[in-house]
Image 1 (cartoon, rainbow, N blue to C red):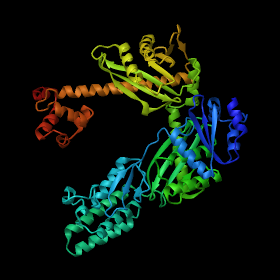
Image 2: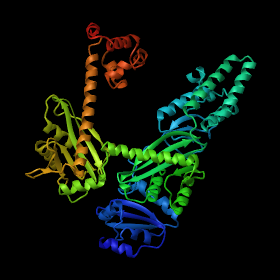
Image 3: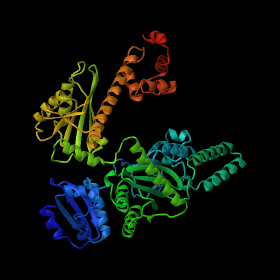
Length: 608
């Protein structure tokens, strides 16, 4: 603890608020809230053998602390969530697999509502149903609903005549006033019944209308109601109720020396719509109630709309449970309750989520994706092994792939805090060495393109190769003015690490977590490079085999490649699918179809 922190601890206020921890460079590394700032912040610096690895890591890197006093604990919670979203601090829970899930939106606030898929949940008066973990299943659901209920598809209501959907009996054309608002709203109400799980009531209504149409000898209309009933039964079968009715999320949290995993099940209208899991390994050693509180704040802060009920496997503190409930209720515009069920079907759901979380950790451990040493500790061990002063917050690793100089490509993978950061991965199609294999020159091209205008400079650059590749890369990197960034080379045969200016290599212990980490980085760079190289070769082969086929010129070849990523994918396409590709007609599609399914002798005949 330095003098700045010691002075800050002396004058901490006895009030609710937010504390912001900075490292030596001024970067925010942790944000937290407190009921009493003085007690909470001081707790990080108490001498204790029971301190968690996360708190120990924060203590090793914190250089200054800033506090913001708030009027209430709720105000502090809201500010904490906003600051975490803004700064993405290293030691706060960071959902690396965070994603937005699709919802089905019905614009009930409009006179003639429409239905579509969205990933943005707004407080705009519309109805949202979801989230759906499987967007394909959601699209199937929407297709079935549209086959039953002819709601409008288009955004624009200002048209002079109805579109093709009206003539295909898929829309009632409210844009041209062909259906009264009251009649149209009845259809919308039926869709809402369906989405809210009230299938029995909807089935009864459709059956009654089918019978009335049949009695009036309106057989065509009765047939449409019959088809809607069949579609309804199909949809209900695909999404059978698995629990009591209602909307809820079920969160199972498992903390283990091998990792921390949160498993979330989405239940809407009594149906499990999907699930997702999140690994929170940076939280190993933290109390479960603190991990759960941080996870809930991060999970519902940005991408997910909270349901009315959240079931959890770990109990929050009474203060956090009430506070989070009020905060989530303000975001949902409906009362949100958090509970730990002790018996019944809700308890069974929580146990199921816990079991799945535990299984995920076991599978990762069995596959060697995690060890009992955390990723962060492995990164710290690697930092010490290669003699660096600064922590390895970001590592860039480069690899080259080619086929005797043909289709030369490069990959860059990025690890942050010892874990892959796939959003930062990059791949490069190299031009300087096309047709002539030269790994040294290829490495120079890729590092030049990466760092010539770079702002995000890594803590370490790893070159996949020995002294030759390292020297080539250093020539460019240092020439660009990056004189302080450490650069190492990794030779595959003996797993030797070469440092700039060193006469001897570094050999890590075979059981060392640092060696496992650097092997993981190298293997990931190789995988990413070879995958891109194979894709480039597949594209080249696709063009070459179609190059001499009569009636298939450059435009059609390009369109076919756009539509199908490989020859196998094209071979599996039907004649109709090929004919639907832009620029194709029946004769050209037939030519390609026959060629792809012909024997070698027949192909010779088909080629012009």
